[in-house]
Length: 279
Image 1 (cartoon, helix red, strand yellow):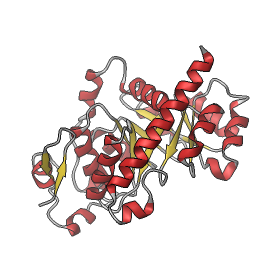
Image 2 (image 1 turned 90 degrees about the horizontal axis):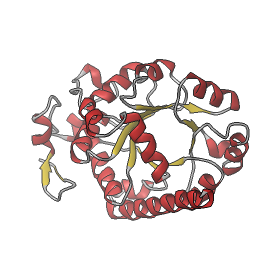
Image 3 (image 1 turned 180 degrees about the horizontal axis):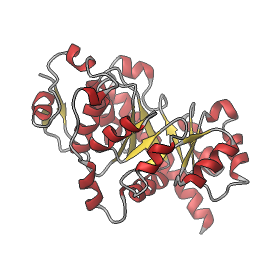
């Protein structure tokens, strides 16, 4: 039986946790990998996100948007299994990361999400690379506070219009950025930013759209976080910069924790600098 340290220091056996919910327990590695991307064909989570709405003032979407703007960092996690996702996420969250997404490509993504939502109720946890309404609904039932896509999926945006979660659509061109904002997106992910010119591209698209909140995503390093935020990005997505391939392959979670601490500090300092300059 696999055990994972909780945020309070206790040890939670995953089999016990998941068997107490409607999620199947982790019995073997094979059973974990059998949870495919189509989670809804196996089990469904309870509507746990409803509890989050009552905890904080305003909507969940408002709270997550505030967390994103205050931290300057969204950690993007891809893992080979739900167990690895949980351990890597715990390392990042204990390192100071407050906003974290697990991508749909992670086997057992919803099981990992529900466990982490239970253990870290104050964190803004979400699901990335959400491409259709069905996956979005399953993510919400498992407690996702935000959903992110590489492009805009209008049906998802419509489904969370009441603020039960924040939807962050992806956009590449000025036209796509404007369309997403006009459709109701509170913030837009500019993707793939490095391939488009990096910091210079963010600076360029912010000029005609100074009031549209943007997240820079793809190929960003911790060292460049301050530059992106300095040029108008509300936040940046960090993937390999926190969850290094070698650290993930070797399960070197102390390294992930160190990178998370560096990223969280760099993001908060960059945000503080911008606010100090505006005051």
